[in-house]
Image (cartoon, rainbow, N blue to C red; front, side, top):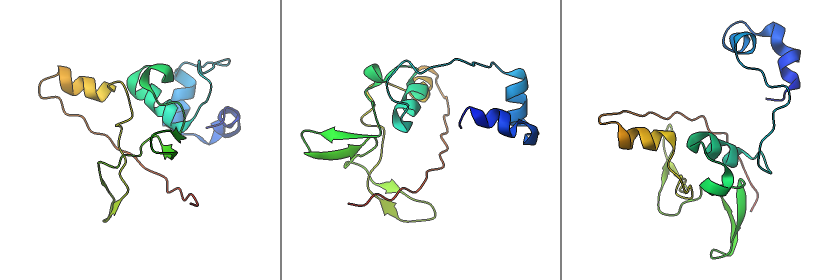
Length: 128
């Protein structure tokens, strides 16, 4: 969300966001210590706690020399993505991520740990 939306919509909030702004930490001069604030790089940074130069996800897409084409951060030809309510799509996974995530570490270090991940993907149509 854009920073100016906090002031613009603050009066409309009633619960979660209102409490977060009222009682949470507020950084008026925060910055990302890496070049791009791309979705993939940001999600990987939050999930691993490491910066892009360590976790390996720099942007949403990049040129893959060996494949000789542009690839997305989640492209994975070794898997098939299942869609709800049905069907399949091209493979997507975290295979390009070089470091374990917090969820990976919880599963590895805590016997019997259960980790659930919920995502609400946006449909993106890119002309080929």
